[in-house]
Image 1 (tube, rainbow, N blue to C red):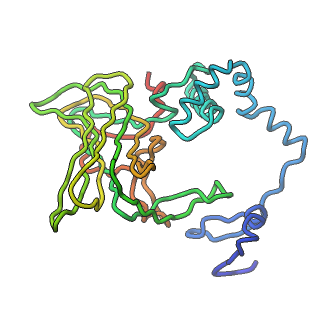
Image 2: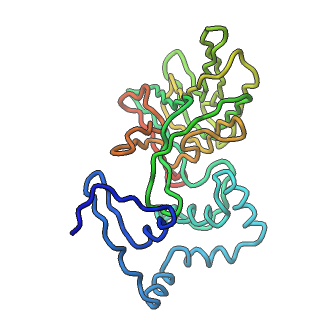
Image 3: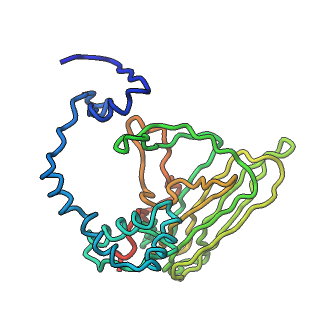
Length: 296
């Protein structure tokens, strides 16, 4: 066996290298081995016959053009095609033994953030920082099974558009209540730090709905901003999805589809901050990502 400390693959050979060599986690067991053999044609056909794609394709072919357009309209919010959302949604329904081929929602898709507050807790505060520069984890182009560290520079500009879709079932407890998503925008003007809030207030009880607000003007130049999910003086549940913080034509919200709002990063990706940092999460409070129909 050959022992090496570094392998440098020229750009023109990277695709061939990925197709022929399988790499394990270099931080625990740095091993390169030949890719497993491709299955023969008969085995490929058998796998296709039992795949979820083939199973859902039968349902997909029965949909009318209008129904497919509805899936496409909902999928656009998540950056997916109509077929991709159809498969993702129905795969989640199949996993949870729910009815299949249910029309999509324009307010949530597949997974949503889920906040639960039970006694003795009566509050929760989550934070998402947006400084000028920060690290993110991104899939490697051409090798979807691999991730890489990428340094992001978030160029700030006005206006800032803040949007969220949510569903709430909260019960007041105590003398003071608030439930909101808000951005605290940090600007510098004539040597002074100014913090401007941009808030979206949740109703205590609401079916899926959309809230949005815009910050068009402020003093000075933007240094950064922080998003907060703030619930105080309540017990109950809150679902949210399709979070967007748009400025300069880009949605800079991290995990906007709420695929895994409680995710933390480790090993080589420990530099990446969590999607939501638990600022104040007492015993009895929790947050995670769920498939909303599975809660019924």
